[in-house]
Image (cartoon, rainbow, N blue to C red; front, side, top):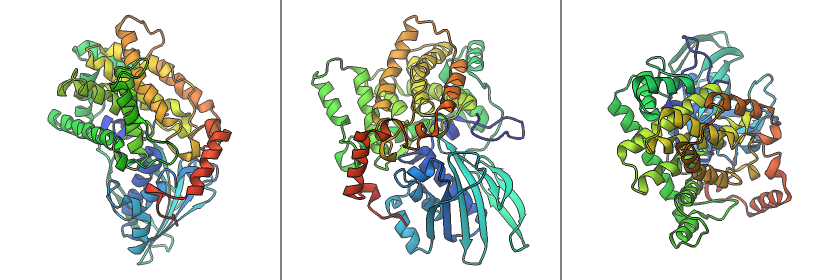
Length: 490
């Protein structure tokens, strides 16, 4: 299921920076934080004036209504409608400061009719001059979004090209609607659309998976090689900063868990663990990034906020253990990006649609390919390592406890990051994968679609409804807001 509607060429436009390694965002969720922000920022552009009142409605049967406060969607909507960047230092207090600056924003449950997506939202806006606008949108995973209706009329705005339309408003007057892209726009068609295409392209041109992924990004975005390298290094720098932030006790504000990443790294350093080594260090680093994600730090989704720890930890381990230089890291990240492009074209990064297997599962597949790339493997081997990683997470549900990306997200990120090295070792050591990556992705999406809604982000099934989880949830509510949640939502 593609994340966006067909373009003029009849195919969706996807790129590594738009859809796979990114966006750079505030935690904790790319769907509910970054996607919400992109919807709100686009709504503000369409309105043409700063809104003075906004009512944001979530369907009672969707996933937003259960998690919009715990995953900072309310702050993200306020930030976008107020015209601020998502990385603004005032993000924590944006609900209060936006109100003090004249934006009255409210959140409610409301039937959205045939919304067509569990992350659907209706945004109604009013300006001081009397203009009003009603917009139906959906957050489609990994920070991507689509505006699908304006005042009941079908449209498609996904932030990847400029939107222009003359529209007759409720009062009969024509309104000129405008919205600029919030992502990189398209320059050309891609070089590959499947894992089979990727492997064939690499074999034909004598490229690795990372080199093919980099070449594709240069082509589809119309940028120079220097520009795409600089952008990828910028995103890697964000990953490393989030890792450091997650190891700093003063910057970690969790609600359910006691921070453990630094303690695990220290125990590994003292040889106090039964196995230790790179897999454990990588797992702890993944948990550190997730500690930053859940503290509202600036992070890089890869491919989502809830799975941001996996690739960041693997890349950091490759770099910090001294076995991979700058060019190796770049190729590894582009190899991961290439696998992610194949994944999202055939499936989705939205756990609301297919469970955790398309978030942390996808991240693990991408990271396994990154390890193969760093080790000098072929594009075919990168695809096979990604495939067996994904096969190991088939059917994984999204059952986050108390609506937060902490339990079981931390340990799942850790396990997927550590497993990336194992899957790469298996393939490079001689394991022959019989089910190719394209088939594996298709099977992953099909199995995810069968999952009931209770197991897709709604916190109404799985671990989220166990007695221990309910007890944790009650304790959090009893303690009251803290850290990023210090203000009371309207």
